[in-house]
Image (cartoon, one colour):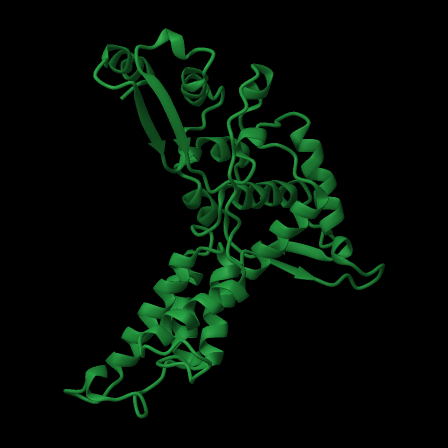
Length: 301
């Protein structure tokens, strides 16, 4: 449905005083001029609401922090300031606590008793892995579910978890979780990145392409390059150095880049040497539905 058809439909609606529109994955509506999103925000603004027969309440959900500041500068210029509520990604400790609580609830005992089904070290690995990728609790639960399935497949014939009690059931161990993580995430590490992480990956590819033959590409020099690029294309918004380094660390944890200490020179994250650990074709595939990043990434030819 295009925007004109949507607004015509909304204007003909007079049965309700207000209509709530919830847009999940708001990032996917981003275009070069952001016209669609701008029209939606403008229509839901109380100043413009008198133009519609029905009040529009717009709720947008995005995985990109500071979406309105980084992607929609036109909102600010037109005095459109939607209320924002940020839900930060879960940390490894938070994910671990939630998993343990869920597991203990299976036995009806939420005290400091032994954790059922999972070995504590396996929970720790699951928590750290899911936190390093996206902080999405659903991914952590998916790892747990698949790890239990893996243990069940390794049981002797005609045996299931129902044949055991709380004292003798087989536990999910580190090797089970590690195997699931490898199968579920490592083969699609780029696909699990958020928009800003993918954007930085594109910038790093471009940076390496412009510096072929150089093995001394530091985090600081990459940040300087990144800032210069945003002087000509600031659609994504400029990351502060702290935010920039956080994304570099996340890309390293996901295996998309390699960060090494500099042979000579000062210490600190800014002086570390970095390089891509994924191929050009993998990057292209991961951004095939994101027109903004397709324009950003340079050709390898």
